[in-house]
Length: 67
Image 1 (cartoon, rainbow, N blue to C red):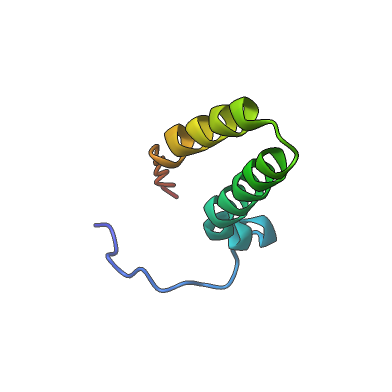
Image 2 (cartoon, rainbow, N blue to C red):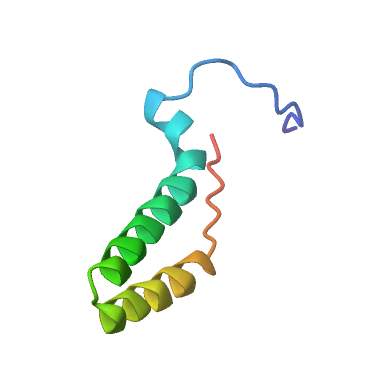
């Protein structure tokens, strides 16, 4: 029978700790790019980057790892 205990064992890879921060970093990078493009006069490029960032932000991928 499978255990339902979800307690962390502390053996997860170090890279797994950074996965929750990935959307935050991506959002900040997109925002910074849009602001730089807008302030430098590249309005069309800023709108395009914002649209791609908004589309990418709407996608969520969940991975369940079974051991």
